[in-house]
Image 1 (spheres, rainbow, N blue to C red):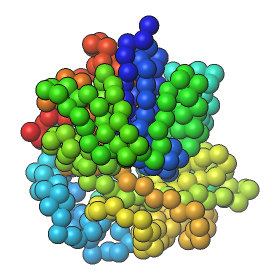
Image 2 (cartoon, rainbow, N blue to C red):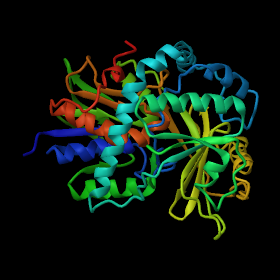
Image 3 (spheres, one colour):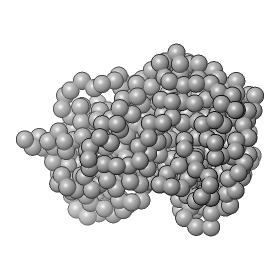
Length: 417
């Protein structure tokens, strides 16, 4: 039975996951995407499923570390200076939330959302329509310094207290996981609760599945505004015409502020540029597990017989430039941890995309009080792919007036006023 028409703005993992659960719930679904279907942040990410990421990006010590990184052109974090009120407002809010009390208040809700999303990936992978290299085989967190060792062990103990499966290991014990790759590390933690997948395959298979289920896609279609009557949005106005719907889901990734401003909603968000590239290792080197090189903030994921390296967080106004210093920072860090991987600067196919970063490190998920038929699914930052299924399922449950599996009250889109 058709429940009505839902218009989703955005065809990244948030929008596609939402569409997947809505179409299976009986809704008529249309997706509006301002770019092409193969051009968004979900394609080039590290493909990691990370219940280990139960703390927010806004955390103790990150501000001081970020200031130190600002003076290193190859550092993992950079704020591009600009006379930009949105950036300044975001930064002031970020400083406000970068404290232990804020982190502690949300570890359980983030953990629960990640764990539930991981279970939903398992269910999705059991569907014969999907085969996206899902491996729930854990992720290695590798560190080289005593300072990061101390932080990581404390975090691992916190994870154990939260019921997550994680082991603190010596360098030799970490090396035993990867006999073909020579580590140069002090030690590591092995989050057996984490997993990985191939994001390109996942996205393409979701699009194919949705098209087969009758979902209509409108590519290269830019939202210009909304037609509103009272507390109801009636139409989305685009450069390709107007679209009517019963429910509207705003899931546009890093473009959220532009679209939410047209609805007079206050949803502070900054685009965080990240880079990635694929590397073909020698035939005698086979990496089994995904890894995070902690001091360098570099993600390493075996994918389709190759290895994807990704990293950096570059906050500022979006542009189409590839800053070589940032990519060189990723490349130069690799042999410091993985001695026998001789990775050169990629001469082509450097991917970049923008993560949607909220100032408090929490996603926007749920209804907004201003309208009766608007829901928001955005702002998951570096956790977007990991949280995609759970956030999409939450939207379908909200529209069906069902109780959701986890507590998402702290993710309300109305928390900034």
